[in-house]
Image 1 (cartoon, rainbow, N blue to C red):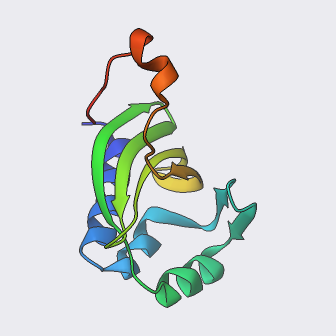
Image 2 (tube, one colour):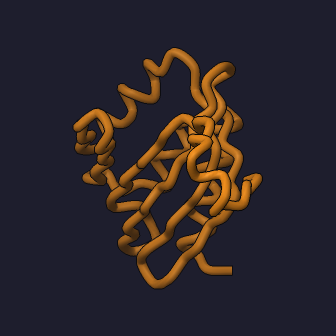
Length: 125
């Protein structure tokens, strides 16, 4: 199994197990996390630790697919916050076996419009 993929799988496990201190083993200290929906960027380990330490409720992450190629890992997952569930795509850029950059895109599922019904299949992910 690809070692970069294993790092991302460990990240998901540590969040689900509520053992966020493990993140220090998985991220470079100067890693950057981008959240385009809110326009936020988290730079460095101190800021990452502060955010994850203050999280009101960490989500339970259910991976649907993880794909790795070289220093790029993409994970598709659902994030359940005990109420809202978000469909998420994470893009991880790796450096020397650790996460150097994470970009997370997420959205809440929505009911498709009726006008498209004749041309689509309903996928269950």
